[in-house]
Image (cartoon, rainbow, N blue to C red):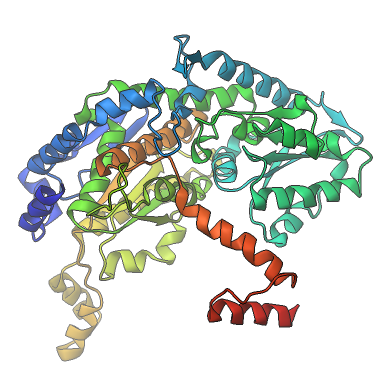
Amino acid sequence: MFERLQALWRERQSRSIISLFTEDPSRATRLSASCGPLHFDFSKTQLDKEILQALFELTTSRAVEERRMAMMSGEPINDTEGRAVLHTALRSNSADPLLVDGADVRPEVRATRERTARFAEAIRAGEYQTQGGAITDVVNIGIGGSDLGPAMATQALAPYHDGPRCHFVSNVDGAHLTDTLKGLNATTTLVIIASKTFTTIETMTNARSARAWLAERVADPSAHLVALSSATDRTQAFGIPAERVFGFADWVGGRYSMWGPIGLSLMIAIGPERFRQLLAGAERLDQHFCEAPLEQNLPVLLALVGLWHQQGCGYSSRAVLPYDQRLARLPAYLQQLEMESNGKRVSREGAPLPYPSGPIVWGEAGTNGQHAFYQLIHQGTSVIPCEFLVAAKGHEEALSHHHTLLVANCLAQSEALMVGRSLEEARSLMEARGFEGAELHRQALHRVFPGNRPSTTLIYPQLTPEVLGMIIALYEHRVFVEGVILGINSFDQWGVELGKALAQSLTPILEGVASAEDKDSSTRSLISYVQRQS
C-alpha cells in the first residue's frame, strides 16, 4: 500500500530540504495551515506537491472521511470490543441527538458534566468540608489514561490554578504513594480514585493503602474519598457514597477520558469555567477536523507527515519537543495516546500487517533536551523527525527575556536540523582556531552536521485552556487518521493484557504460597534472588 511513497522517497532522498525553499519562495506559506490560534508549519520536510498528492489519494482510498463520519455518529468503530468511540461527545455543546444503541447519550453527558462541576465548585469554595475543614489537597490515584491526561493538563495549566493543590499517584511502587502523601494533612485531603472498572490492580492497591492512611488519621475516611468509575457496586463496597461517584460510558476509552469525570482533579485546580474553555478548544478542533478540506486540515496534515516519515522514509522514531516547561508531560501523554493506539501488528480484520505500524514516540521539554539527546538528533546515524511546539508568548511577563531565549532556541533547532554544517564550514571554523594539516581535517569532521533532517513546528499565541484543548484534540485526531490509513483499530489495547495476567500469577509465587516450577529458568532464578533478599 505504501509502495508509491517509498518509490517517491528513493527518488528524493539525496536532495536537500533547504533547496526546496530556494526553488519555491512561497514554500513556507504553502506547506503550513492554521486553525484559529494554532499554526502548523511542515515545510521543513521533504514533502512536495507530488508526495502530498500521493498522501491525499491514500487518505481518500482508505476512506478516512467516511470513517470519521462513522466515529462522530456513534457507530461501533472499536470493532474488537463492539463499542462506539465518542470521547468527542464529552466536549460537545451540540443539542442534536447522538444515538448509541438507539439512545441519545447527550443528556447523560450534560448531567454528569454539570454534577461534576457543582462538586468541583463546592470543593473550591470550601463548601464541602471534612473534619479538618475545607479541602486543601487533592490526590488523584489512577494509571494510564486515568493519570496521564489530567496530570499532564494540570501541570500545563499551572498559571490558572486557584483551587486546592493537586497531586497524582500512578505507580504501584509504594514510593510513589508514600512520597506524595508525605507532608499532607489527611484531615484536609481528598483522594480521587480513578478507575472505570474499579479493578485496575495498580490503582486499587494504591487506593486501599491511601484509605488505610486516612483511617489512621481521620474519623470518617469515606468522607475523603471520591470515585471516577462506572462500577457503582464496587465503589459502594469500597465505602464511597453514590453522590461522590462519577461515571462514564464504555464508549470513552481510557486514554481519551480526561474530557469527562477523569478530569475532575484538573477542574478542581482551575475551576469549571476554565475547564469549559478547555472543552471549547477541543470542540473547536473537532469542528475543524470535520469541516476543513484535507489540504488545510491540521489533524490530517499532521498524520500524513507522520505516515510519510514512517511508512515512506522508514524513520521508526518520532521526537515530540515542546518548548514549554509546563508541557513537560506532553511527550509521555502522547506516548500512550499514539503507541497504545497504533502499536498494533494486525489489521482490523486480523491479518498480519505487511508494513510498520505506529512509530516510537518520545521527547522532552526544550531547552533541557538540547543538553541531553539532541546530540544524537543532530549528528547520530539515525534520522529522527522532530515535532516542535512553542508559544509566541509566555505567562511570566517579568521574565519575558527568558521566553525570547526559549523561542530563539526552538526556531534555531529546527533550522539547524535542516541546514546542518558542511565540512568546508567546519574546516573554516577550525582553521580560525589555529588548527592545520591532518589535525584540522580531523577536528572539522567532528563538527560536521549532516542536516537535511525533517521537523515540523506547531506554534500558538500562548498556552491557555482553549489552546491546550485544541492541541490535545489535534493529536487525538492525528492518531485516528493514521490508524485508519494503516487499517488498524486504534481504540483497543490488548497488548497490555498478557503482562497483567502473568503478574497476577507471579504474585503468589513471590509471596511463597505457590510454586514456580512451571516458569522458565530465568524467571525462577530471578524469583529466587528476590526471595533471598526478602
